[in-house]
Each structure stands twice: as structure tokens, then as C-alpha cells.
Image (cartoon, rainbow over the protein chains, first blue to last red):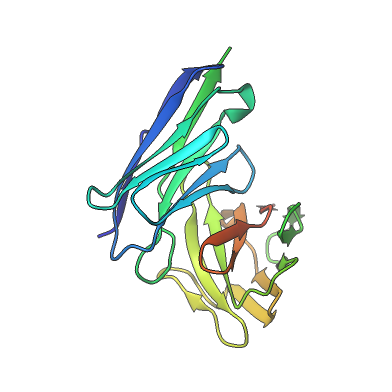
Length: 109
Length: 114
């Protein structure tokens, strides 16, 4: 079956760094997306990885290891507005995104 | 700015009535759009894949006669919730792909059936 595993909730301090891990199992693989979702809003695209390695985009970086079925999202210089849910979504062989419940990130002053 | 526009953002309707939700890709053509549903504190659930010019593909357990999808053009897909009931109250979100690597979401529609 297809499965996504992320921590349910994480807490971090403003200005710090946090890493949100994701392990996945899918039928085939066509890349992995990370999305940010604030409460009551639709998800916003953050990153896409299809090759192994680290992709850096400003304060956010995303890492992928296809052989391990593992990805992480790294957030630096945390701001209060980063409080949101972060969704790891791999794409299967049918180009369908597989969604988990996401990780709720709480930023404290 | 938004590249996928969804309308309305909020709607309250009476039980038994129908509600139409529109999803538009603003600056690109989308042959395929997706409709999702999200209950509070739960993950997105794919309801159906909307294909321009052909019938939508529904996920198992989704009633196609209740959730009517029309993808009339390359920039517009609509979801109509027919004979809505309180249990249909949810957050509905559409998405469209630009190329193979960018998926954008509409703003979402919060439906409340009273």
C-alpha cells in the first residue's frame, strides 16, 4: 500500500532551525512535494524534489533520498508566520499526489 | 499572484439545495484538474480527477451523481454538490498542474450546509 509518515506536531523557537522528516512508500515514484498549509486555507507549494540531494530555496530547503524513501524540509530563521502545517506529498507512478496528515509546526517567541 | 482561482471561498446553503464551485487556471491551460476534500485536522482526500472534454474519474467511495464535475474548457472545471446535506459540509480544494512539476491549488471553498 501507499503510506506517508510525518510527525504529527513539532514545536520550535522563533529564529531557530527546524527539520521536518517524512518517510514514504508509494507505487512508483515521480518526485516529492512539500506544501505549507495555514489553518483554514489551501496548501501552498514550497518545493519539488525528483533527484537525490538538497534543494535550497531561501529559508526553506528540501532533501530527498529515493533509496531510503525519505525526505526532509528544513526551515531556517523561523518566523512566527511559519506556524502552519507542512505536508509531504510524494507522487506515484500515475502522477497522483499521495497525501498524509501533515506536521503541525508551532513557533514560540 | 494566484495562478488557480477558486470561487466561492465560502458558501452556506440549505439542506437539499445544490452548490457549484468553480476552479480556473488563470495563466495556463490545464487538461487535468483535481478536486479534493478536507475535513478538519485531516489530510486532503482526492475526490476525482477532472479531464477536459471527457468524464471525470472518481475515487472509490465518491458518489459521482452527487458530486458532478464538468471540465468544459482548458481553464475551467466545476464541482457541483447536488442535494447537499450537513455531512457534505467540508473544505473543497481544486488543483491544476502547470507542466509536470508544478501543482497549484485554488484558495479552497468552505461549504456549510444547514
